[in-house]
Length: 146
Image (cartoon, rainbow, N blue to C red):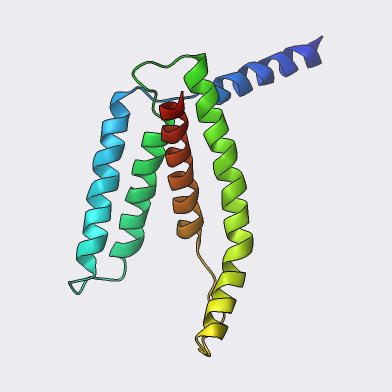
């Protein structure tokens, strides 16, 4: 009996985590954070900035996009929930393909341009940014189609 109570509590916790979403107004906060940090990242190209600023702006950009991704729509129903799940699945698959193919693409381009660059790997920011962009674009595209 004690084991079944623990399993039930774990199941309830997992269901809560599965249904976790922020309120709709956090979507605006996410847009402000993402657009603001993206604008600062572009501005950084034209000014001499400290090295520590780039990872902070990347973090704000990812957090803004995550807020957009996990915030409810104004009308959140089972259909929207289904579209959101589909977009997360597609983003996951495309991110894995990206992670697998990007080193090959870098090598081929480097070879074609006859550059002797060292192997350039990509960082967590590139993969997470790609995944969030793909998820948001698929979600918005799926919503428009239906």
